Length: 454
Image 1 (tube, rainbow, N blue to C red):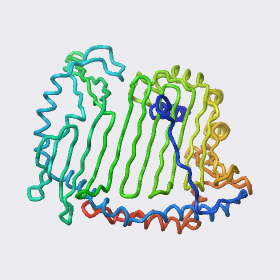
Image 2 (spheres, rainbow, N blue to C red):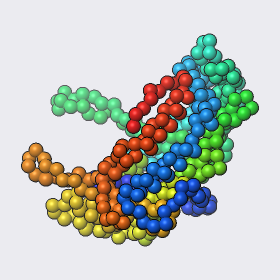
Image 3 (cartoon, helix red, strand yellow):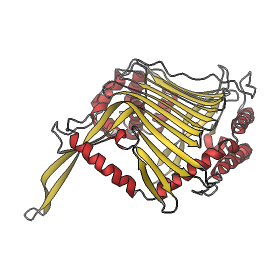
Image 4 (cartoon, rainbow, N blue to C red):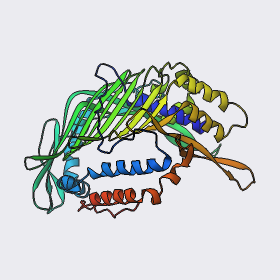
């Protein structure tokens, strides 16, 4: 049961460390209108197989590898040359810069550390602004050659397989926020009297990065931009984190927004193909209290080593948490933890009893963490639940595995997830997905990847 408690703690920690609301607007999600007609009534388990097949077929039908062919081939060439060509010039240019910058840095207390509040012996703080300049790939010598300095940007120039000139530029701007931590190491000496090693001297050093508030990436062939991303962040390491990320590869676009504070969290992600929104993912948690998490950089250590603190975290939380995956507006999977405090109290009540096993955890999960499936209406078409499967051990006693299952209220049937999504029922969809992935993999000329089978 300790592992299950860690899962709950990890869920809360992820909520805390990812996203939430504050000065910026809440995250926004596009509305979607499916081409597949959504059902007007609750379907049986078998009828839902047909419906899900239609939705999956519509989803994959939007993808055309020819749209991303040029971008994939150019990025593939950049990755190959970036990894395979010699970077000695790059290292020579930046070694002096880093040493000069390091000499200017005065050590101070790291944010995330349980070490004593002592000053470190050295600091290794790296800034994005240190890694700038223009470099060109020389195909004859297979090296990246330094061309010139470039303020606040790193530019890589190279030719693709057809000899077209390409350039990739990463630019940095805005205020830098330092995120750092303390590290420690020891020198040991052998003690002949005890036959063991004793600590002779202890050193501490500070490591970290300075994160700019904005980073952009632009990939061009000539003057034609074929791929780009923009990353903006607003970091107050003690109170809040806001992140906005947009990625575009030809006509395929991804947008991620995160808003995190010490009491609320919002997250939204979407995928678009042209003007069509194919997928959205949202999650939020309200009115929780973060206690103790900032004192450790290790989530598992925080969860297992601060029992009293995370006990307070869950018991004092006033709100709940929700999450939703929406595919084409045709399928919605919604999880809703109505009250973090109530669910946690119930968990602690049963987990501290004697002879607790997986059946108790499954019963608790299905009661307090409902996950429901909708098809464009308010009617619940299916419930995602946990189920136990008994098995005999070599000692003759009975143990239980936990599996994910689907319960269908129309015909009151339950299927293990693997037994429902079989090759027999969804073979056509599986073949389409396999073919689509392999068509994209075939675009890679430098970094060849073997075709895959699902």
